[in-house]
Length: 263
Length: 304
Image (cartoon, rainbow over all chains, first blue to last red):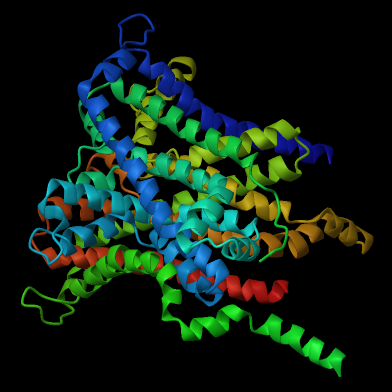
């Protein structure tokens, strides 16, 4: 057992080195902008860049719309499958896993060809349509995570009893979903939402191929043209991802632990 | 009599919940899942089918295998080959390193905070991919990166003089491993947690050595999750483009970058060849998943 612990420390130390050296190196590199002294110049340049602000805000807005769309698509379906159509569960689970099988670049390629300006449904003919298509694409990418998060949340509540109780009290379907089910799975939905945010905020492939002024293509552009700013941006992106994951962890402490009655 | 009818009622209630009976009567049942299916069909399934069918059509819309046959040209084969190599290498390295770390933090007797810190960090690092990850590795192992410079100054070892290049197969693999390892850790830790202490005690009582316990209990139990995750990591790396594109531009010609260039500017001068490349990607990631399902059902049969 002693030697086991020794090896565990070795493995852990090697892993920690592999994961921390790039972070340290990136921080160090991002501070090298001023010759001869460490400074935060690169961060100042980046944060003061109007294109940084514009693209970042664009991506934040896109992420928010993605989350709303994801919730609208996933929550009713996951709820209904638990309540009434359990036989559809394998089909839906299979579909939600497809975005992990089909690469994002293939999905967006399909969009470009199917929803181009000359198609019956010309999303790409207008600015708004293209923005909508980007949000739709992001919602597809986030589908596996959103569905899993919501389904896990639903597993911890007694969907049937809650629904029946609400029905007895005279609630309609809209009321049941928005005022009974959603508040109960809110923490799960928020976990899915923050994960979606982390995935979407720096996404490059879809935004770039749909020619959207998003944060991901901006990052790539800076990387191709500047020396120290990319490192600063990498640290900022890491901080954003870290923030999203921390929020998920904090939220999970508030989540109900087990079901009253497993469905 | 009452007893029988009661139990009958209970059984009937259990086997046929009211939901089933009602779903036959009301097609409106499907309204609840309609948005999901409409969304999935319009924005996931149809676009993919469109490309797959396009791969078997020529410009006149006739059925043909020409596009698939055209994939055999050396530049495309090379792109597929390097993509498969990078994905395979990064998923295998990531999987074994991730498994080692997971075993170390779960069963290695390390302090509890290490386990939770590692899991938190893995959650972050597995989502830290794309363009920023490329920046981080350029700042580390690029020509002026910290690790490169320090190795040169402190040890006198110039990795670039010894054939290493961040814009190469190994550079890309090493970068991909940064999100592959944490993904493995996040997925495999619950599986290792599932190994009950009692199993180890039972095995020891029956006289099994530590090696036998690992070979006959631990490995068969975590094998399906492990294999499944390897395949997930493979597909993850195979479809990734942002990291590679930001890291190497188009100097390393992996399939997603080739497809990206084709979508942007028809570099292959044949629109249907783009469909064929996309089709090839789906076939490879799809096959990976078929193998995964096949392996999993086989191993689960033995687990029961």
